[in-house]
Image (cartoon, rainbow, N blue to C red; front, side):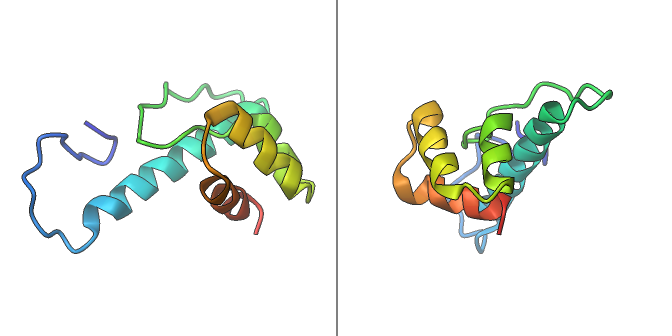
Length: 96
């Protein structure tokens, strides 16, 4: 079960995109937790559940925030095996 209460045993019903939005929120929470770990936060976040998306390493976040988006995309792809579009979308959300 995800942190927002999603069960993996959900019937195939039209939820108006709610399931997709919950998955996106869970992915963003995981990214924020990675970012906190990279900044040396004194509060240790709980382990991140698998939310169907990759975690973003502190190195990728740092590159994105420094404006080195191409390098961040390359590193994210190497670390996660994601495709170019998915990696670019994630990096763009990290540092618009």
